[in-house]
Structure formats: structure tokens, C-alpha cells
Image (cartoon, rainbow, N blue to C red):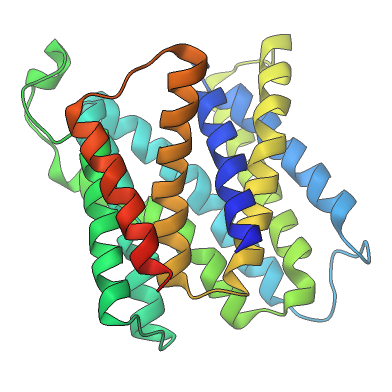
Length: 279
């Protein structure tokens, strides 16, 4: 449980940095972020070998890295076409993918109370972000693209689920190698996009990339550690709603952002769901 708590805390730090990062083209920041994570993963590896006799961390890391970037691109495209509120709801619903995967393929079975906790956590995550309603901007007046929303849900959920897949198929001693290949291939994929845009890195990209990369690596590494100790149906809902709760609390104290009545209700649902998930 300690790994899970630390993972969500570092993920909240990452989200807060990204929340206040304003840039027209984020790929420079993403690239430096992934390179920072790659270097940190290599520094943490013991032994420092790129192959330990098992191909699983290599190919699973490569696939996961590409999915990481694809989920970012899909989310950005969905925000542009469908608006931020609707896209955020489907991003949060992506937590259903690793939960369904763990139950269907890996035989994990939540108790009835834990199942209620999962449902409550998903509902709270959606409610905290806001339900789709009136268009928030003039761009939202365009038609909805449901295929893009579904793609966002599936890619974000699959990116999360890959850590569980490795926890089942790989060896625990290769956790560091798996993380190394995730960030390496995510960085290479981002480099391709940068080259296509013919955009060079700026000092701002480097600064914010490193600032994002450190908590990104720590949250990913700790989440994988949590998955080796706890069932996925407990880890992912706690991780998702825990990050939301921490961000809300920090935003209130540091940035004076107040929760409205709906968000306060969602926060209460989060606390109840966390209790049910741990029964």
C-alpha cells in the first residue's frame, strides 16, 4: 500500500506541473520528459544490462512506450474535436480497461463490497471532472466524434493495463528494464513527431521536460511495484481517484481553487470508495 500511496502522490505532482504548463506544441517537453525517464530508469537498473535473458521486458516495453505516446495524441485530438470536459470523462473511464483485464484474464475476483467500491470510484472520477453538458467553447458546438472518445478511453486504459500485463508475464527483477524500454521507445516515437514538425528543442522544453520527467518516472515505477503486491482492481481505482483527490486538495491550498457542490460530493464518494476497496 505504501508504493500505491507514493505512486499517486508523484502522479499528482506530475499532473499539477502539466496543468500549469502552457505550450502550443508539447512534443518538445514530452521528448525531454521521456529521455529524463529513460536516464533515470537506466540509473536505477541493477545490473545495468539491456538484456537479462528474457525478451518480455524489451517487447512489452516497446509496445507500451508507443501506446503511451498514442494515448497522449488521442487525448489531445479528442480535446480539440470534442472539448475538454467530454474528453476528460472518457480518459477517466479508461480505468475500466485494466480492471476488466485483471478480472477476465488474470482471475482476480473482487468481493461484492470491493466491486461496489470500484463502481463508486469510477462514478466519482467522472463526476469530479464534470459531466458532458452545454458546450464549453465555440469549438464544442461542432458534432461529437464518438470514435475518438472511445479511442481515447481504450488507449489510456491500455497504457495503464500494460504494467499489469508485465507484472503477470515478466519477472519482478526486470521491472527496471521494462521501465527503461517504455520510456526509450516513447522518446523515439516522440522524436519522430518532432522531426516531422521540423521543430527544435528550446531551453523551456528542457526545463519543463526534466520537471515533468522526474515525477513521471517515480510514479510509473512505484505503480508497477504496487501491482506486484496488490490486485489490479484495487490499485487502479485507488490510483485514479487518489490522484484526483490530492490535486483537488493541493489546488485549494496553493492556488485557492475551490470545489463546487458537485466536486465536494465526488470527493465524498472517493473517500467511501477507498474504504470499500480496502475491506
